[in-house]
Image (cartoon, rainbow, N blue to C red; front, side):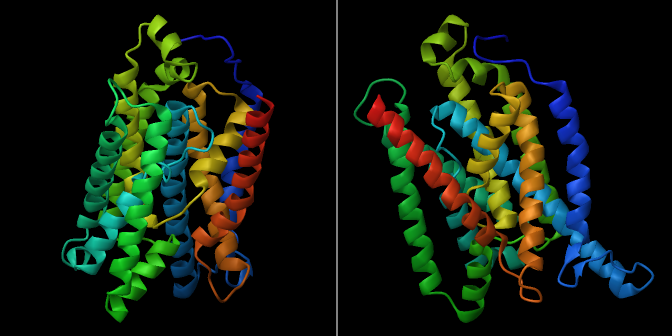
Length: 333
């Protein structure tokens, strides 16, 4: 669907980006607590180290791509550059579900319960946000009421997580705190397979909506003139994004700002056409989180810092810059 304001994506830029991504990922594979060296695969230890780094790379690609694509869809639906999975309380709800599964032993008994519980809690949170935003009005809730409701519900979820953590045993406290900080330690294979299936399903749903999201970013009226049912697109987009965000949170913990930074940078380079923006943001998000993880395990070696700390250190200033620009435009407007 060709719409005004959507420039043609440069094939050269896409080709250069796709060629550079494997190079950057290969460098991430070389980085570890011993410096930038390739492990000696002739020894069992070297093979184990290489296997661990490779699995962390896969985790980074999965979690980073899911959070990035989720951010793209949320920003398109809400028409707000500050939107990401945390804004609507989706990540907070998934985090609360995962915390309950960890503390009450469901994960130890059935590893697959973690992504499933996170997704169910995320969907329940999204429905709660939608219900709160819909009260007192007729028809679909406005973007601003959705954002405000999401922020409130997210704060409540965070408070409940803190309460559960404060009353947990020492072992449960350690597991939940380490998970909440965000890390890419390889999850059990069953969890990764289920999370990957969730993320692939969410990506397929988001990409099928891509041309409709182009129209929706221009407003409901433009979408209506294009023959698009905006309510159906919004609900389908929210479910697809929630599925990806919940899967990412269940295996990677609370990793913030990826869904904010990567869509902005990718959109600035390749343009706003969601037919390209969604897959390219997925690749860029995976590469970005893998690079952050490589720094997290290298900079203060042998001490490893959670990757969520690195993304927060990068994303915090980035968020403030965007917020400052929005405030200036609001004052000037």
